[in-house]
Image 1 (cartoon, helix red, strand yellow):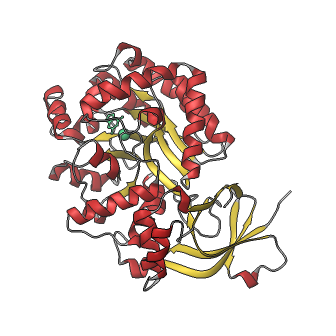
Image 2: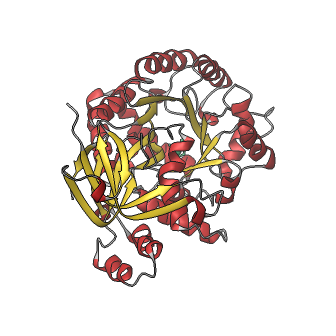
Image 3: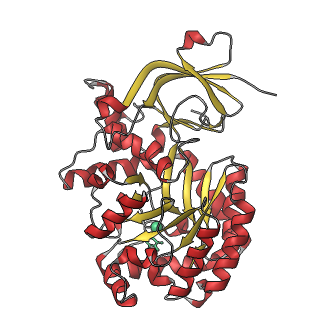
Length: 426
Ligand code: GUN
Ligand code: ZN
């Protein structure tokens, strides 16, 4: 039975991409707006008086955002987030790989998947593109936990057949077979979508990269997600392993792993040819600011977003937070270090529509518009005394929003909706 409800508050609305065009022309906050929600979808947008006599959720003075979309994370790293003292390769070997070994156990995988997705919802994140581990069990656990919560997610088996512990390695053939079987089972099932996922070129042989490139060619509407040029030591390692490659991107391109549905995490130390090729094919990049500082990788240049689609992500557990608010704050700080102060309108767009676009889900999530899923994150802009006193002195709506972006945490997340149901009440 269909059940209509109205959610009232200040609406964050997008008319374009503020990282390409001026934010004044592309992003608006409609104060005292209202959303009519029915069958999990936004049916109409107006003012509270347009929808009389319907059950009403009054969030006047709060900011109603699309649910946050985390464009790159590793749910199996939940338990090792904030592990001290290592840079990328040592961090993988010391903390990440031993933890990921446990995900062959379906019970453990299910426990962490549930814990992780509940943490995301508490932080206002309603969609995520997550790596799993090499174990097919970890993929099943992730998609089952997401389906229970009606969340639109992207996931896939991480493929590795070298330079990792034996217990985490597959082969070229088993990576192809397992990915294909999982993809057939999950891709397009309700709100689940599959991403073919070679971890990164140092942990795949050319044979495995080729096998996954072939699989992508057979299933071209899947995404392909991987890591690219995250840390300088890693780039040198790749150069040594793939002597014939022109650059890091070429280690994917040569095996059929470059395309418009390709999503490349980090992308910090790019060469000119790589940037040109990524733009030419319409691929997407993902900015992972808390990870890039936490693991000491470098500063992603957001000016790339003028040419290439860019999403925003926590990169849990290389990233040091589950929160997209904290991630926006970190993106702002990195922008400042690069001489590019990102406007709050840009930051909020990156965390929602920008990420959804990179993940090719922009027709369903990431924007408040008629026909879009009713996945919402409702922000209290006065959630702590420190934020409240600053917001009270704000000159305009954006000046009132910015303190929550910079200082907010899950206390700022007043209410969360997934597919038209309130999953966390304020
Ligand atoms: N590169 C390859 N694997 C990983 C990972 O798990 N996290 C990060 N940050 N970078 C990677
Ligand atoms: Zn990652």
